Amino acid sequence: MTRPWRRRHLGTEADRATFRTLHTASLASPALREGLTRTSAERSIRHLHDLLGGPALALTDTATTLAWHGTGQHHEEQCPGLAVATVERGRTRMFDREELPCDVSGCPVRSAIVSPLVVEERVIGTLQVFPAYATAGLARAADEVAQWVSSQLELAELDASRNRLMEAEVRALRAQISPHFIYNSLGAIASFVRTDPDRARDLLLEFADFTRYSFRRHGEYTTLAEELRSVERYLLLEQARFGDRLQVTLRIAPEVLPVAVPFLCIQPLVENAVRHGLETAERGGHIRIVARDQGQECVIEVEDDGTGEDPDVVRRALAGDAALDSTGLGNVDGRLRNAFGDDFGLAVETAPGAGTKVVVRVPKFAPGVHA
Image (cartoon, rainbow, N blue to C red; front, side, top):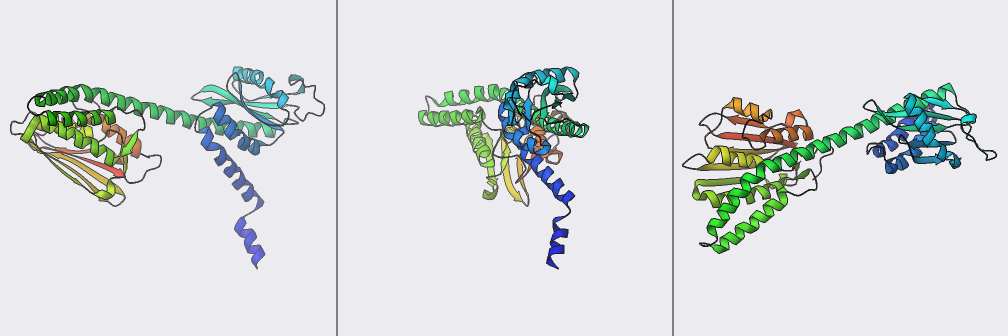
């Protein structure tokens, strides 16, 4: 009774072969998702060789060999020529023994099947299989594997493009924030140099820590704790400028402090609250920052009781209207959506004379998001 059950449980030989193929492909995938480089080729080629079999397999860019796996390595010097010939045609090609001259007795490499690797309709390299005999079935298999490799490389290119976009957005945000903030902060510090030098020194240290965090170059994500620490430094400097006109309340749940958030995603919202909510109000105002645990999510609220804003203007700012003087609202909204999906953009509640409340929701855990 046990043996038949186990056979059914493990599946047919075809099922097991399918599992082995998918498992082997999954082993090659992480390296290929880093792009087509010598390092990624060397890490993935053994698994690709397992998929196609034969005496040997090679990966090239359009002109040089990146990696070789198997026997007959003296044929490696022929790979660039095979790559160039295949790139010119733009499709899978088969080469026979006459096109692979060899003086080594008993060499198992007698033919080659070369398939192009294509990313965004551009050939960036080749997959080269070296069997004893080239068959139509193996050519189809090589072409299918090359298409799968191409899809992994295309995902790598998308990841790289996304990272470049995120870096550009952060650079744009820094450029937008820094002139306004630096001018006002240094002006506030200068006002205390003679009257209260100790406070001027403390503020200068806070300013140094704030700018060190804001202009750091590593990591597109940080912890909520670090982001809020930077916000506190920002508010200390603004309180030095506004005095009693700026009142601040922070209510932070300790359990959400380790949550990963996009770098510089809270401070721009607080700066908007100061600039657009309180700066023009004679009586000043109050800013409330709340971060709370809500099941699988962390909810952060930045609220002011200032002058408020026309909802249509806010919609334009979230859409990235460059004509508006809104510090990073659309930038932050876009980065949150890129990181966590469209369900996690900014929610803004405002009206003229009614203040503004901005709500940020982030998942406590998200694939690929690490501080």
